[in-house]
Image (cartoon, rainbow, N blue to C red; front, side):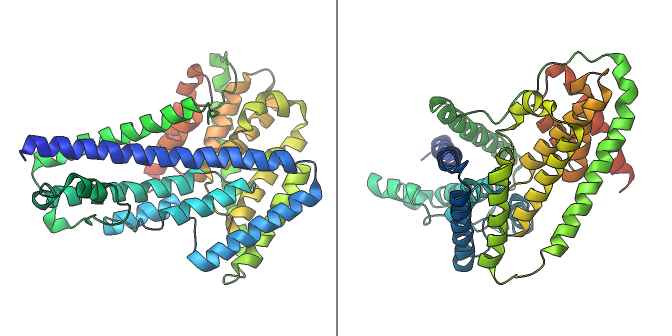
Length: 398
């Protein structure tokens, strides 16, 4: 096999594996969306059934934690392990996705992004190990029958080679080629995921907040709004710290602890069902639905959403916090925009929301780009300006 043929073979194999990863991501999102909606469409308005269902979910999550370990694993743990060891253990990826799916289906106020990203990191390492095996074992591989080659290529756990620094190619051209190929695989996986989402008509994660006609005079409010958003974010971080202390018990009793989360989910499901899940499906309703309520009521809703998020996270109903925080931040922005009715609503909302979310998540550029997806294009420079303020603050306070 020539070097050109080998490169082509590896590229095609990588494209196949990245498509499989994209397909698995789609299956996870598809099941989470459809199963949770089916379940809660039957539960809403029936308090006893809600309580029974969430208790069952809590027992199941606690049981699986006892049996399998502390899953789902969140993204920053997996990424941290990858940075330290240059590899991660990917065999528990199905356990990770299964527990995350149960957490989400039963209404926890967390997002799918943390467990899904963690699993994607695991699967990406799996893909690399499979490709590495094919690269280093090519002489033996080409002598095998086609059926045996296919078996080895598609076997989920065997025929993989873990990263070893002393075996890694060091030539600059290899590094450039690796970056190019990895980028190709990422886009291929995203393409497979997007196509499957479109074919099955799955709802978008992104809901636009409306239109904006902001003017230069709105900039008079910019710095005061940034400071308010900063203070709101700091207040949530204090809440998070206190909640962690409060729930520092029953470390070896995951079922008991998960049942506390079950109670919280059932109460939210009975009295404020729109706060169930991460909030991304409710974001589109914020401009029309929530602005009919008083500022006090909406501030209570924001606080409840954040408390609900922390109760879930601290009682074993683990998931992502980005979507819930963004939901609460945008709702907080819309709430306070009522006090500035003579200014552009989306200007006020975007500055408050991005300031609060950036303070909490501590990623100015990433959070700004994500929040900008929910707002019209002409608001993007304002959100970018907020991100720049926090980026400078972060650099100067190191």
